[in-house]
Length: 209
Image (cartoon, rainbow, N blue to C red; front, side, top):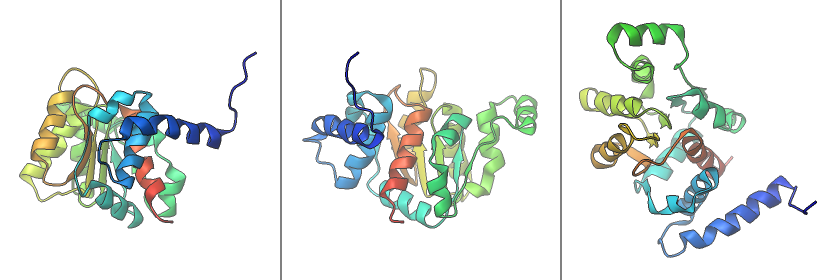
């Protein structure tokens, strides 16, 4: 039987060593390197380095929000599940998701919209000053952008990385082009719940407690 590394920390450190050359020459700050590395690690795809977009103030805005105990509002349960909730709780924050709530399903059906859209509408003003993490549903990202256009709601940070071929690229393009708040995103069709969670966890690991 082949020998392999069994210690989790050794595995993680070795992973980061393997990822590092893919980031050389990109002129990233040390904190950006940490976020990029976590995203590539979560995806197993070094090509992510060419598609990640981090608004200049995004990492600092995210860290400040987390350290201030702000909550995280997720589009799907897979994003919420992947977040290090123990570390988040150390700052007083919680991760929320309403996608499976019966009243959200009823509201979505009544209005002819997706449950992800109905969830964001239900969160409403709670999104103001908080972190939004979207990894699956482009409609959730479109809805948050619409809410910002029509109201004074301003999240501290949007992690907008919905994955797929219907609306995903377009929603992220719109985020990158028009967002009035800081964002972390991935252009094109790449993304996913694990990527959204990896960004949040990177920010949690960067934070100072």
